Amino acid sequence: MNVALAKTETGRAVSETFAMARSRLPGAGKVADARRKAFESYERAGLPTRRIEDWKYTDLRVLMREVLPLAAVPDQSALAKAVDAVKAAAVENACRLVLVDGTFAPKLSDLGGLDKGLRVQSLRETLDAGADLPAAATDDVMVSLNAAMATDGVIVSVDDGVALTKPVQIVHVATASSASVFTRSRVQVGKGARVTLVESFAAVSGAKSYQVNDAVIVSIGDEADVAHIRLMDDATDAVNISSGLVTVGAKSKVNFLGLTSGGRVSRYQGFITLAGEGSDLSVNGVNLLKESQHGDTTLVVDHAVPNCTSREVFRAVVDDRAHSVFQGKIIVRPDAQKTDGKMMTRALLLSDDAEADNKPELEIFADDVTCGHGAAIGALDESLLFYLRARGLSEKEAQALLIQAFVGEAIESIADDGLRDAVVAIAERWLAARG
Image (cartoon, rainbow, N blue to C red):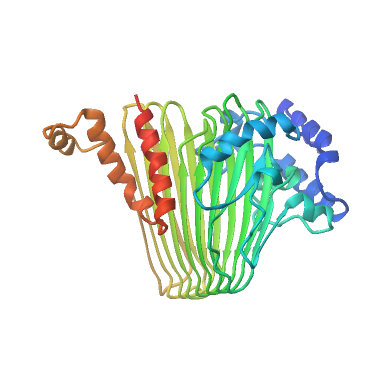
């Protein structure tokens, strides 16, 4: 019996989008073959639904519905519009690498005076020169779609033993409306290097209903020290699906923080593999959601070798009719003895219609480990509110003070004072904008 795969209208639209975009996608030969196979993988599954366990709370066929046509290559007008958005998102004293509507913009980037031992190229440049498409060790369907459709990105390499004097900031700016953007970047950190990486997502005024699908593949060498901060402040009706795929070497220290405050629908999925013994991983996250926003953070920490430590702290503040999701999984492989892994997620609901789903998981296949997880959901403490209001604070001021304290444990994990202040400023702006 012959079996034919029936395509929905959405499936046909995505196939047409891929067919139309192929002439714009960099890379030929084996890269084009890899793209075709990745799209076939996506096409077999389609947009994820709640029937897939990892996407149980984020049904993209309902929330996203369709994949929009690829954004056009930004012209001079789009680049001019992006200037203000880049300035607003810029981290002080950082080396900025700017992507506008999915295309690397060297004129808006800081490519002069790079630290010695730091090299930067665009993805398009490397693919046109014959390099392979950066591979991602996951079968996630949205990562496959990203591989098929990625138009550009940045390739960042830091040599062994180099301590960068400035953070490297990848700034994604959207100027197009009703269009999709696909970017894929690779960051390679050498042995003993010290790096601070910042990712920022922003939009120009007037950009509406766009979609972002981003993937960052990070390889961290032995004895390295990496701080990675991700700030997502897309337009209020945008969709942002981002994936981080990180491999950590031996005796390395990695500190990650993600802050989501924008977008109508967002999902950050991090796949982190501790592949070298003696490494220390700290993962922190904050969702600040209001109105009808849907924010999903899904993390998988894979302890593949012995003697590694991981800590996960996640905080969600949910107002109005917003919905926050946290899914955290710690996997301990059979050979990963002496693993120490802990995870704690808490959500603060500010209205009766707000919703939070927290799902921590442990998969342990070794017997000499220390692992634990916890989850809690609640409202602001009325007695603390009364205490603060009795001392002259308004209700909004009292709530803001308690919310800042609630998310502070995650934000305080940022060692750099300037970066920490920048993240606090984003949280304060969100609080000030509350009704």
